[in-house]
Length: 185
Ligand SMILES: C[S@@+](CC[C@H](N)C(=O)[O-])C[C@H]1O[C@@H](n2cnc3c(N)ncnc32)[C@H](O)[C@@H]1O
Image: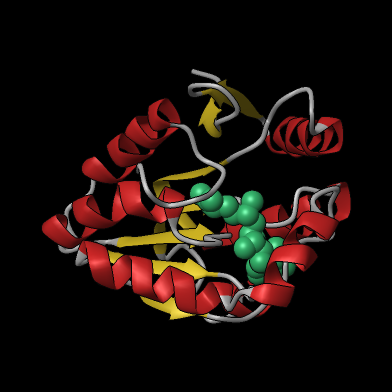
């Protein structure tokens, strides 16, 4: 959404909103929200559909190549406060879990979440840890998806691909760097 600084393009945002649009009720988890740019696309849809929207972020930046960028911003800005203010200004109701992704994942029963979108740390070990932690939480017929599947993140692509091979899944592509697991049929 224009006006919120972040890492999501408009076409990715439209895809993301469609991901939420199919739900009535249910649970949508976003891992990695930063200032709320991606959240701004799904928030109104989730709120309108009675979907519980949970944003997970420890607001400590990431262990990937943007680490310094996050550190520089976090040194001068309370980014969690910016996120909350952006949501308030847009009238979006969101449940915030301001903690590490793996701690948040442990709060959910297996097969209890309809959508999980991963946009936390993009280094290989973190992506693998997120996939292992969150994939059991997605209910049958739900969707596990994420951001930054592109040439700038070869480790992320490798891990997402290997996890798919192990589980007999296929990696489908949305606009730009969006990926989502689907079944082979
Ligand atoms: C790429 S940014 C998210 C961008 C956001 N989706 C947007 O549209 O602008 C990554 C975010 O993930 C958070 N993050 C990274 N690793 C995390 C972890 N292990 N647990 C929780 N949050 C994490 C960072 O604090 C950062 O806010």
